[in-house]
Image 1 (cartoon, one colour):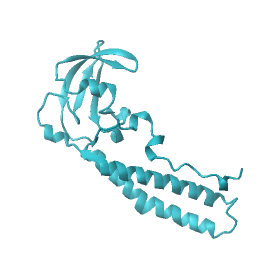
Image 2 (image 1 turned 60 degrees about the vertical axis):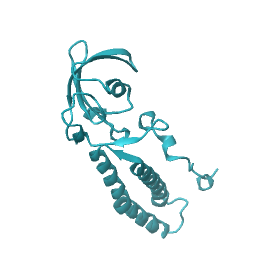
Image 3 (image 1 turned 135 degrees about the vertical axis):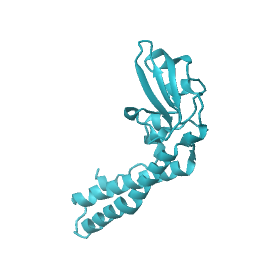
Image 4 (image 1 turned 30 degrees about the horizontal axis):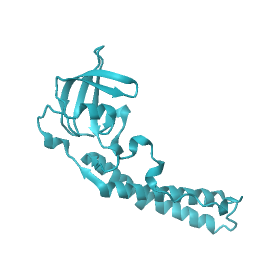
Length: 185
């Protein structure tokens, strides 16, 4: 069948998300001020720069005549759908975002959203994680989602506590070495 007659799915934008980015039903979309700013910057870039550029390319390609074998036109239309899908997703996430500023926690030793936590495993290996929103998660930067198993186990614990939790690799035991609230970059 010719691709011109196949309609791509107009399904909900969140269906294509990995499970780690999906918000549990009925939960709020917590996000740090820095994460909120990054989402707004990406949305602005897509709306003001990338989308107009792709529209321009598609219009130029369409003016060249036969669209059925015109790679610029076909790719451009596909890219335009991807951009529009991302714009819809970002708009929904920004609208539903509840900004939580970690600096408002002050000098708290209890762990909540926005905390930077240093933990140690039984072998003494230390790792530092910051508990952030699902749209800010980047494990390579030490940012874990507040809905992750580790973050859920850490929430409401205090500096000096030892906790056991079920991780994807099995039951783990860790010690909380330090809790810090500061600017998340």
